[in-house]
Image 1 (cartoon, rainbow, N blue to C red):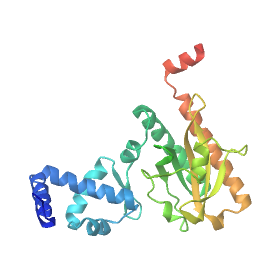
Image 2 (image 1 turned 90 degrees about the horizontal axis):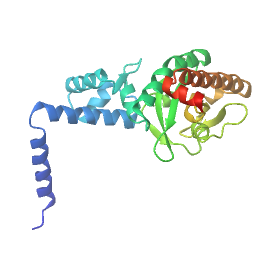
Image 3 (image 1 turned 30 degrees about the vertical axis):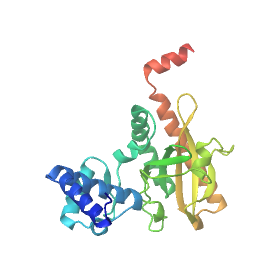
Image 4 (image 1 turned 90 degrees about the vertical axis):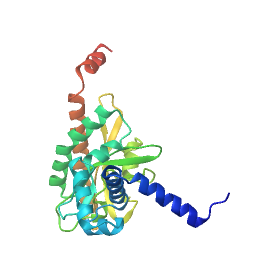
Length: 253
């Protein structure tokens, strides 16, 4: 027996109602829908998230507060919502302890880099296939910055053709950093450098992004040195925290 389009719609609606019976499943669906919107669309204000989900503003706010409590979304200084630290870490394809360690150790390093450079800074790791994942970001407080890169924590993008991709592929030149135009924004420039683990393998890239009009040749050299130093600082932090059993094994080798 063939089912008409209206019949299929009715069945789907009945299943949805059955699934949504009770407050638990319904709340979960709402929260996941909001999280998906935040991740796919970048920073969004409460009103826009409510409009996109078709939910009342009060209901949207309750769901966002729950997601924020568990670290899956976070508030931006201007009141928008972005992917949170726990969601970003969940996208990192590595041992949980390694992901947690790298994430936590990068906080101070990125904050110092943003303070010293005046540009927004990022920590990126390799993702599945030819992709990379933005794990953490610290936004600049300059009135003129590249807002197109705000709210990128947790996002997955293609490596090819990007400064971060070149770094993760081991293509950093002797200068210690890579400079390229941003793939997704022709008026922005990216400066990136590699972070290594205790074995010398590249585990992440640190980068800054800013408007290209601020990135003249001399300024790029200054920023490149700052990014390189930040990557070195994080590398040293990871190596100094190496577990004792691993260090002993390395010393015996």
